[in-house]
Length: 380
Image (cartoon, rainbow, N blue to C red; front, side, top):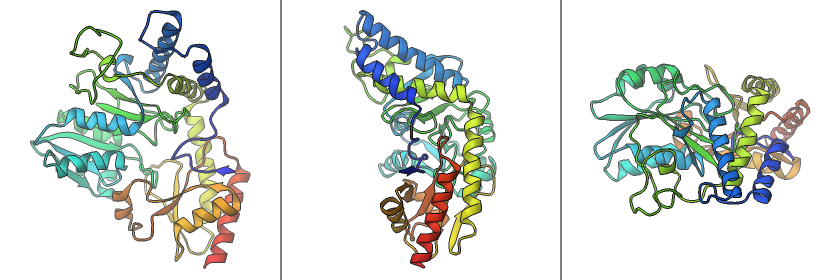
């Protein structure tokens, strides 16, 4: 199988990820922070080591403000629901994943908040549209660092500077960029940063995280056992423990630790450059195929490519690639309904998205281009 769906989940994983998860299960499979015995201490030590590695990756000064979560979606919900109150106004972009759009829309429908969705080109161009949309009641700016459809990157430092100057928290969805492009939460003015473990950070599914600025008064989404102050009904308020109720996904964190280490040792710039080499090869090959329409953003972008084929259903292309060529890609709306509405691809079923990873080869890209050429010739 040729795997070209790394924007959904990176695969294959570095072998040390599997090894770290296996070691966690087989050698110290106890609950971190839930006992004083050696195995519990070893598990807790690994969790804190991972927290420090992530802090280093995102230029976070105090690792205690990096919170583990089951996914980036959970982390985004924690940030949104833990920040907003009745009557608040939120500004976001039309590029957002449903992990942002649906929580905001649910609160809006319930009459709790108001939301301004910025048009796609306006949100990307500069911070001007963001500034223009600010009201006295604006309490949160939410932005995806990069689109999971086209790869278009928002001017995060500029938006962050605006947020800081107006004293409005900035929540960033780094699902597509963590481990792919450098992120400095302080330099970029980020109040909260949500990230998954299973994409650019090379870890497994089922683990993600949320950075929260020490000064931001976030309320926990859930409550439960924390392993500390267990004799009290009121939970502890200090981070990270207040936001990590329940048993942590220790094997997932171990795998994430190994993935982050791989990214740091290999170098984000090296990974980014390699993936762009493959995407440039894709663009060169696909642009010569009659009927193929590439959705190429104007400015800075990630190594992700979406396209459509005139008169051909994108799901049919994906099915043929899978069943006849053993090539895995993603076709459809990519959980980004607002983006496809803006791109005018919603009525056509969305796009075909191709996202090479660090471990793909030039030969695999050439095989994909040949397959698409044959499919288009057969269907048009």
